[in-house]
Image (cartoon, rainbow, N blue to C red; front, side, top):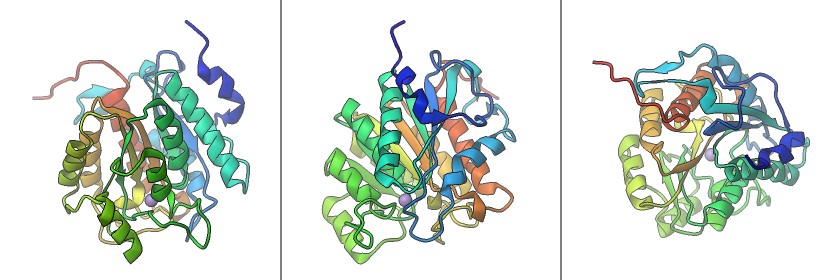
Amino acid sequence: MGRKRADGILHLVERSGRFFASGESYESAGVVIVGGPMDFTASWRPGARFGPARIRAVSDALEDFSPEAGKVLEPGCFFDLGDVMIPPGNVAAGLSRVETVIDAVVSDGKLPILLGGEHLVTLASVRAMHRLYPELTVVQLDAHMDLRHDYLGEALSHATVMRRVIEVVGEGNLYQCGIRSGTREEFEYALERSTLIREDDLAMAVKRALDLTGERPLYVTLDIDVVDPAFAPGTGTPEPGGYTSRDVLRAVRLLVGTRLVGFDLVEVAPPYDHSDMTSLLAAKIVREVVLARGCAIAPIVIE
Ligand SMILES: [Mn+2]
C-alpha cells in the first residue's frame, strides 16, 4: 500500500476519547470521524467547541445494532481520527487546518464525518471536498438560512457560511431543507437562486433535494438546530417550531445513499443541553451514517 495522505496531518489532530465501537485501523475504514471543535463566530451562545468530545462520550450509551439499518457497527469499518487542534481566536487558521485534514481523509478514499463545532467549519470541509469532486452538490438541513453576505462586517461567520459555500460550489448546487428562520434579504437571495426547498415535511424536502441533485456527488451538512429545541436544546441558536428527532433520523437515512461523499453535523453545544439529549441524538445520527456507508456487510432483516 502506498503512503497515506493522513500520515502528513497527524500533527494537526489530537485523540482524546473516541466514538464507541470505532476501530483501530485507519487503513481498513471506509468512514473517518473528525472533530472540528471551533466556536469563535457564534452569534449568540458559544459552546459548540465542546460538541465532538460530548458526542463521543455519550455514544457509549447506544447499541452497536441499528434495527432500521439492520446492521451492526463493525470496528474495522470506521475510524475516529480525533479533533483538529484549533489555534484559539484564529478563524482562518482553524478553517485551514480543518480543510487540510478533510482533504487528506478524502484523498485517502474515505468518507469523512466532520463533527462541529460551529457551522462555519462546513466551509473548510466543502472547500476540500469541492477540489476532489468539482461536481459537488450540497444539501443543508438547518433551521437558519446562514446566507448573510456578512455578519457585522465579518465575511466568515456561522451566519454567513452557506453564502460562502455557494461561492465555492456555484449557484444551483445548494439545496436547503428545514429552514424556518432568516432575514428578508436571505429569503430573497434564496428564492432568486432556488436554493430553498419549500416543503414542510422534512422527508419530502430531502427527497426533492435528492431529485434536484441528480447523479452528482453529494455533501450533507446537518445543523442540529434543524431539530426542535424540545428535542435538541443543546445548541447556540435554538429556533422553535422545528422537527422531531425521529423526523431528522428519517431524513438522514434517506440521504446516506451511494452518492454521499461527505457529511457534517454541527452546532451541538453541550453547555446548554439537558440530560445529554442533544449529544445523544447527534451520536445516533453519526451511527446511522456509519452503518449506511462504513461497511459493505449485508443487512440483517428482522421479520
Ligand atoms: Mn447553521
